[in-house]
Image (cartoon, rainbow, N blue to C red; front, side):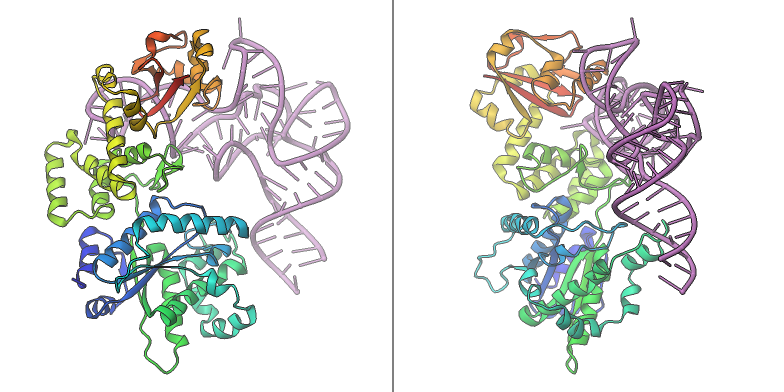
Length: 435
RNA sequence: GGGGAGAUACUCAAGCGGCCAACGAGGACAGACUGUAAAUCUGUUGUUUUUAACUUCGCAGGUUCGAAUCCUGCUCUCCCCA
């Protein structure tokens, strides 16, 4: 089974670069590999989902994955892919973030497993915190030349980039050495021979393999590298954004409904790519789906399956079902009839992820105009001006019926005698609850 | 240490005394078309009690009837020379 890993990545389009000898090593024996995650926030968004899935594939192929949280590297700032110097986070924030990220991981990897290839979770702060600068300079800095470090794209871009010389602090320059040392440390303590990551990490990873080799003078040290492509969208815009915000793996930050909608809205071209990367469906199933989708694109089978698989993987079967049900109702042509089939508790379950706001019955009975309903009383939109604009643009509906600025909400509009569904455009839904 | 350039709305980027809530581009949002797709076309994109007023162009003062535009000080960034 072990040999399946690289082959699996290959057909899924998840293989960008691989160091010679890596595949042979993986075929030979159970191997340990790690991926690092930056604690720049207290949760992870779907950009990191690729790396998580990479670890899961790795484990499924019989190998041992290590998830590394960068408590130390997070204090430095990775220059890769950044055109500006990063702002440093303070220690309290970092600790908080590390905790949040750890809890996300444990949803996907079972760190308590007793299997031989059970996943491991480490924090590089644990071994970096007592490393003095002098020791680091002697033991690590001596092994790698500045010339070598300067040759990395991430560094070159900052020093001689097209946008002029933006400059780079010594701190960020050091980053690749610290990450390289992580690799060496895991090699020593966990016999970890492979580092994986996004293709923007290739430079950092190879500094690591180089360092592992040079730190082990006189013995044959084996260190390998493997990267997957950065996820892009067909139109070139940035992957993983929705309504201006990131799509998070945490229901508190991105509701399951929105998460589900994000995948459902993928373009045909993107959906074909994503279903290979973000789901664990096997090759025949995926090919079948793509085939069927091409025959009847309007049914959106591909997007539906993609959204189902990813939502179930990241959240749960139940939460997926609720999100799907909410979507079906909100986008249904027979909205009025469908909505009535729900009793109150189902209603609340199904629409849990939809932004809601409460309003007192007294206020409601006095009459509620649309400006108040959209902004003044509910804050769905940022300002009254925005509400007025939306109404002028003919983009607001109450219970799926378009309304204009003069519309007044009455008890006629209440669903289950308590709820009103307001839409701005097709895809932004809000629920007002009258209490 | 010396010399130079610069800081404008989400981003890039004009404007250099009144016609500036600020050209333009991108992004974002919406409308039409559709398949909750793409492409295309159109509109919107500081706040408010919207034919008007108010707050905004790094920060703080000043000149002027009037400043994003002029002056002074401060903070920050980049470049070049030592």
